[in-house]
Image (cartoon, one colour):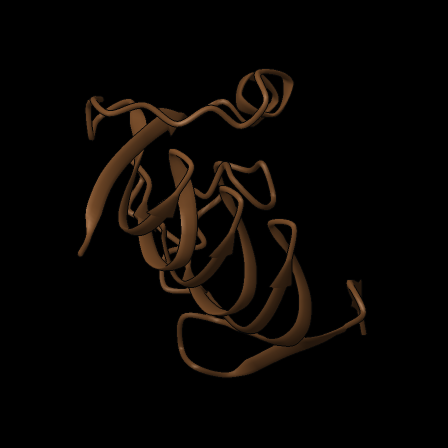
Length: 123
């Protein structure tokens, strides 16, 4: 059974608020999650979509991207790198730990490998 949840886009706001998820929201201003939940937060497999078109598909634990997944950047990703530069199509595939790239490969939109992450450090 899949559920839909929402949270504020501003990362400092949701981190400070205890990573709260809501039952209603707006795709133009909030992050939308569709997937498995536990105790009112994403837990298990699911997909989050951001207003800029960025998308994460993968594992979640207690409301945070943790486990194997794929993160595809939208027109200006504000989630991971806090930049409005065009990163559309760039992708990270691998393990995330508490919402951060942990072990995996970061590639450009063209598919060309840019860098590798090992234990949270860009190589």
